[in-house]
Structures are given as structure tokens and as C-alpha cells.
Length: 135
Ligand code: NI
Image 1 (cartoon, helix red, strand yellow):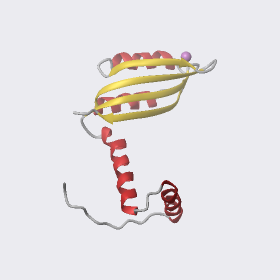
Image 2: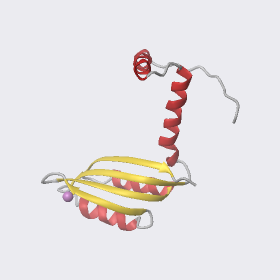
Image 3: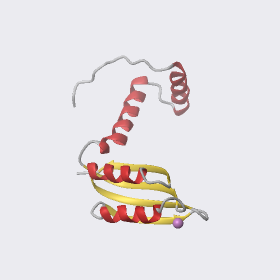
Image 4: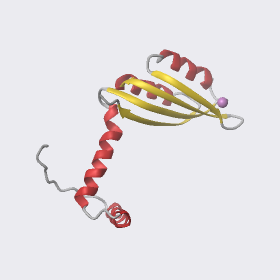
């Protein structure tokens, strides 16, 4: 275990107030403990973007009436055939669809895949839930 360090940070008053109230409600009294937990969450949330192999899901909501998005999404998935494990399609309404794509692979490639999906016309929302692949 490495040595702990101490540092000071400024946070907006309203955020501090919200943290204070929440920590009382969930029974975490130590500010250090709270910040440590928050930082740990931040790291696991963002580490996949930088290095190594990742696993997880990409959730996409799109309007299939716009710009051939169905066909383009299929093309993209064929392009990333090595990274895509499976996908699930749900028809939400007469024009909206939900697609859940399970991915596994190099973080750089997965990042490119996510960017390509985000840039498609007709895509309304993209949410990723990715984790570093355990070694
Ligand atoms: Ni559909």
C-alpha cells in the first residue's frame, strides 16, 4: 500500500451542502472516506477510455425513420465484428428503437465504435456501461 496524501480542494457551496445532507442520510461521516469512494467510482467509470481491454454494453436509442440509421448501425456492427459479442433490438414505438450491444475488446477500438454510433444521424441517445476487463 502506498502512502496517503493530503490535498485541499474547492467545491461550490451548493455541492458541499448536497454532499453534507446525503452523507448524513447514508451514514458516512468521514469526508475523506466520501471523497475516496467518489474518486474510486470516477476512476472505474473513466479508466476504460484510456487503456487495456474492456467489457460492457452500449445502449442506443434511435429513430429509425431518420437517415437510414438502421442500415448504418448494421454496417458499423459488421465493421466491429471482433468487438461485438451480441446485440438486442427492441421496437419501442412506431419509429423509436432501442439497441443494446454487448462489447468486449480493446478500449481504443470500442471508443471508436461508440463515436461512430454517436455521430449517426437519427441516434437520439447513447449510454455506455463499460468496465476494464478483469485480468
Ligand atoms: Ni425497431
